[in-house]
Length: 190
Image (cartoon, rainbow, N blue to C red; front, top):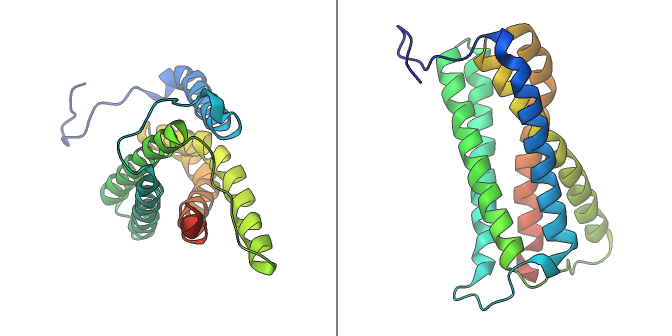
């Protein structure tokens, strides 16, 4: 892909975005189905011996989620200050750490013989499951939201981008921050 006179990559015109919808929907469905299969059908995972302590992977997940949250917050501040170039860089950084999270998350659930059980009791158990359930539902939704927001921003469909970004940003911030909270609450039980 070539670059324009500002040194930025040439992006397809907005009229070519019809192809993106199918790709985004396919990626979203595929990612969520794989996660559901690995979580609810662990028997499809790896059956051999693992030569390293896989319980380190959830820690990496928390680190990647932390960086995603920081990058998103920085992107939000940049766009409030109308610094579009910096906003784009932080959004790409957030996508990068989210992708790294997804790789380590899927690796952990593929290699793990079983899913750890939360051992908290009383009100803290209810709080944990509330956070986990809302996090999980919104994490499934954020995949297409973030991808559509990215494509529409990058292809200068700014009206669509701004309209969906008002939903995407707070949901993505919630998902990345609660991912860290879920890890911290679950860490003693890995």
